[in-house]
Length: 131
Image (cartoon, rainbow, N blue to C red; front, top):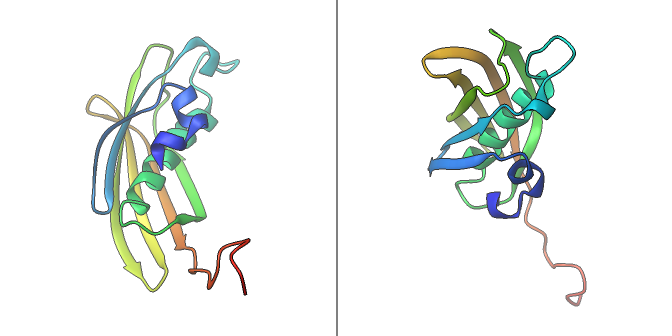
């Protein structure tokens, strides 16, 4: 899934590790990611966390999408900072799941993210495949 994610890869996000229900991704804050206050725009921090969440919840195989997510910004990130997002599965039940992602700069927490996932129901037939 990550190999086809042009949005995340275009921002320089790298997949560092992945496993069942877990993923670690990294991103360097560039000049184009900084807002008018001179800090990383929260949307980029969210995108990094969301991408780690997506990699973790899709690690089981079936196509899984975000049903919702929220983030708490703890500390600002600045141009040149190397951020690492660690995603961990908390629980899966039926076609749903809950994942937590911590975004860090070294040992310092930058943001905490919680994502809720939903695995797509399998279709009886794919488009263009008979009745």
